[in-house]
Image (cartoon, rainbow, N blue to C red; front, side, top):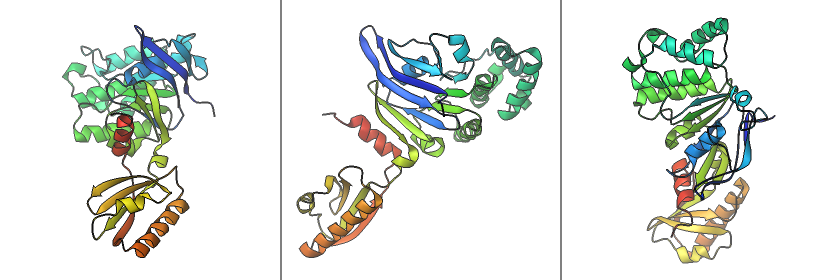
Length: 311
């Protein structure tokens, strides 16, 4: 199936400084893709390129197989966008603003009325229809931001920090809204909330200094690829390092080690390694009292990738 949005080897420079280098990603229908990275990693530039606000120095961005820089109006018909600050005219009422957005999106008068009704119900805005936007809470304003992004029924919706500044209840409501939204569209979510990513996202795309360092499904990241060993006495790290199947070892505490096998081990490979270590323990009297799988959190993966290669 053709991706809704496809970035192909996109590069972007500012005043000779390379901000994005060979970025390639896709947004697929029915999924939520998380765009992650520290401040300055290139996330905002990526969003501006995907929405046609910026043009790449090299590469292309296709929306429904249409180049957004060659045919911006045609491509943008399929996109909805909520930037980190919702683009609201706060002196208008909710109905006035959403009607205005629908009309400039090319929706005719009859369709505008029906779409207004639909998005207000979807975003739970019916009870504030006639209120001025500036009088509403941050949570409601974020909902209006979602409503303006989807009023023209886009195939892809790009959301930049949609839960930023919300209280815990509002954050959960926004996550529920995103999960409902994915039924009819592909979603790109840029966020710093890693717990949020684990809850609602299907894939992760991690940027570091303008380059992709990780692009995987959440289900792949949650697979066990690390084990821990706990000993009755100080862990015999030197002896364990002699095992050819061991990649790297870290101390959790004096008596407990965390072990990463070499490569990308299968479940059977991990079981074989555990049996090998148990046999070594018995043969050498290591005092091994427990061996167990370790599930890496997205936070640990994020930190490890960001800090990799740093002195």
